Length: 179
Image (cartoon, rainbow, N blue to C red; front, side):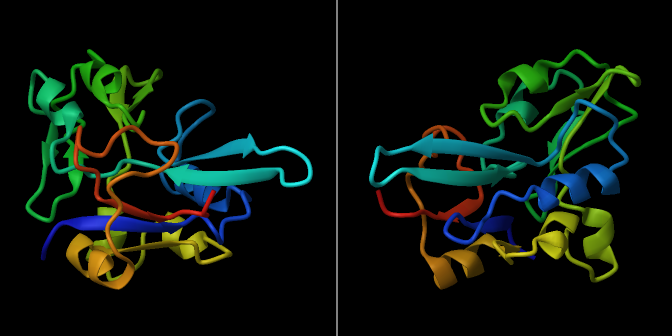
């Protein structure tokens, strides 16, 4: 299997945050940490105001800064490209939290450890979709091998609202509304 990635259609998302809630529920997260977040961006002026909703989790980057920053190897990149973490190795230093330009790693205060989106690898192993994909009422989120997603949707070199993709090589494609 090749590098896994996400496709997100900004033109379909209504900002309902069902993906965020299902991810939080699936990972049994308490108040505070979010492995997937929906951000709202307002702009324009009368008579053409707009609001965009961007859902983001870990982008399972080609060059993940969190992996580079982790002093004990708790953050690591799997053969399928998923950036994962080893809960047993984590020392709670939060170097990964500070280094990620997307805010993906989240410090779990009660455990004094860091965790993040793991692409729902437990669900993938039994043939199910990641919870964010399965729960999206507008079907705005897809996943698959990034090469297949690029072949289907094209590649983004610049994604509005996100840092420059040349920094980490995020494995996300976003269908953006024209502005």
